[in-house]
Image 1 (cartoon, helix red, strand yellow):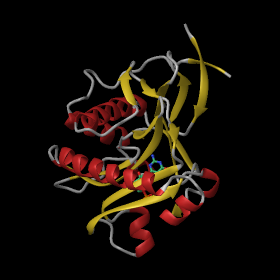
Image 2 (cartoon, protein in one colour):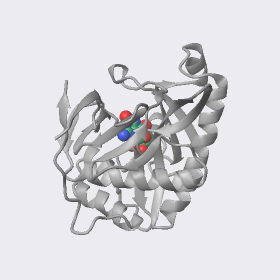
Image 3 (cartoon, helix red, strand yellow):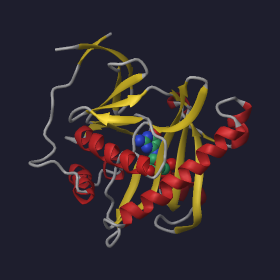
Image 4 (cartoon, protein in one colour):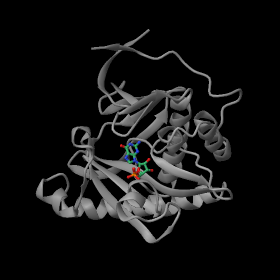
Length: 254
Ligand code: 5GP
C-alpha cells in the first residue's frame, strides 16, 4: 500500500499529491453536504458515479476545445488532474429558474430564463459563498478583467455543449456550478476548467416529467438519491456493470 500526502479535504473530495510534479489525485467521497454543511449525509456509490460522470463530461468538453485540468481516471474513485491555482469563484450558469435564483427574484421554479445567465460567487464557506459582481472580483484581485472575459466565454461554451449533450439523453440542464484554475506552463498561463461536473453540482431534470435527477433530491429529502445519480450515468452510457462497486480508499499521511 502506498502512502500519499493529503493536500486538502473538501466536502465531497480529497486531494492527494500526484505521482508526478504538477499533478494531483482527486478522490471522490460518498459524503454529501447541503446548505453550507448544515445538512450532512452519505449517498452510497456517489463517489464512484461522480468520478465517472465528471471524467466523461470533461473528456467530451476537451474534445470541443475546452481546456480542462483532467488527465485520466485512475480507478473507481480517483482521477489524475493537473495542479492548478484555483480561482476562488463559483461560476454558476443558469438556463431555467431554480434554487437560489428562484428564491431571490420570486420566480417560479421551472420558468425558462430569457437567456442563459452567468453568476459569480466568492468561494468562502465561512461567508456562505456570497454572490459577487465583476467589480468585487477585480477590486479584490481574485481575477483580472481578461480572466473574467475568458471565464464567461468558457462557461457559456460549456453550457451550450452540455445543454445539447443532456437533451440528447432526455435530460434538461437547469443550471450548474463550475470552477476554474490557472495552469502555468513555462511562461504561459491558461485558464482551465477544474474541480468536477456531476449531479452534485448540476440541476438535471428529466425532460418529459421534470423529475429531479440531482443533489436537490438529497437537499430536499426527496428520496431515491442513489437511483437518480445512477440513472444519469446509465443514460450517459457509463453505468458500470453490476452497479457502482467500490474500492478501498487511500491511506493518508497527515
Ligand atoms: P443555487 O445558487 O441555486 O443554490 O445553485 C445553482 C447551481 O450551482 C446548482 O446546480 C447547484 O448544484 C450548484 N452549486 C451552487 N453552490 C454549490 C456548491 O457549493 N457546491 C456544489 N457542488 N454545487 C453548487
